[in-house]
Amino acid sequence: MVSQSSAQTLNPRTVHREFFGVPGALAVMTGTVSVVFVWYFSCNPQVGCQLPTTHEQWTHILRGAFNYQDYLSSTALVAYTVWWAWLALLYFVLPGHVVEGVELRDGSRLKYPINGLSSFFVTLAVALAAYTYWGTPPFVWIADHYFQLAVSSILFATAQALFVYAYSFRSSSVMLALAGNSCNPIYDFFIGRELNPRLGPLDLKYFCELRPGIMGWVLLNTSFAIRQHTVFGSVSNSMWLAIVPQIAYCVDTLVFERNVLTTMDIVTDGFGWMLSFGDLTWVPVMYSLQARFLAFHPVHHSSPMAALIAVMAVASFLVFRLSNSEKNAFRTDPNDPKVRHLKYITTESGSKLLVSGWWGMARHINYTGDWFFGLAQCLAAGFETPMTYFFAVYFLVLLLHRNYRDECKCRDKYKKDWIRYCEQVPYLFIPYVI
Image (tube, rainbow, N blue to C red; front, side, top):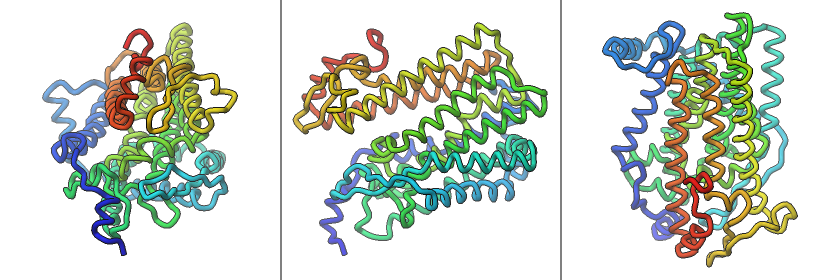
């Protein structure tokens, strides 16, 4: 049994609350769910896709939201639960390297199976078998029941967040997130109380980070493309420009699954409603917006425009991938021939901060590539409605917030060394611009 003083040392009381505390947590929870509803009822085959600016449009949205019989579906909830359970089963049964995560506050390291990519390929094989046997109907059903599945994911994500919050009280030795021990149930439920909730070997935060949502995004995109072909007889070049980069991004994420173990989501953040909803609902539901729009409203780009979008997607993805790969290679082995030529400064804590290569150009050059990559997919949907550009606007806000968190964390950790580093790498995102 852990003493009270030991528990307080391991899990100090949270002093600083992010998102302005409880009011911000409530605003984010209600706001993000509302965005899912507004974007569905304002962008669908029946009403088109226009920002709601009139009283009639908002009346339509509210009427649709209150008419819950149309979107609360036991069939969709069962389908979503089976999807989550299927991927959890693959987490257990598929072989893969088992690697250790970063060192935790108590000196321990958790172990994680690296089998996300094999889970994807097994799931892909099952989907191809279903297509061979049943044809397009299962995928058209997914596209047509998108919102029922989206609501089911919200219910599942919320139930999961409630479970991990209650589960975090099982022992005083449970390691809590430094930001999730405020003793306010609303805030801690939102931000995540426990750092790494596990059911046996199943790490819920790590599992949800890349599996149900990322692979669900691929499944939704594929289903929307199949629906477009079923209704219109072909798949438009805009659909290919939207979904091929996104699917490539998802596969790339799974190829480099190990790298997620050093991200802030895994290392620092607790697993609460914010990550549960973000992983299970927000990523697949809102990131597939372009494909969903194009499924009922095909856009046909000219060859020069299509080429421009494709080049933008490829170039920005290369910035994102090459910069991240350089950073991870340097972290793993600074003497690796690929990165040993890079210049760096050594901090008092012993950490090495790159000041050349990709990371000598800007402190968050990977965010720049990530954002322009997302913008290219928005451009694929054309210019007929601003609603399909939600991803670019939201992602900009998200990356700016991440940048703020990163800068604050590094400033506190490295102190005067961070000032010295910023003098050598003065730009945040784009060299010689910002």
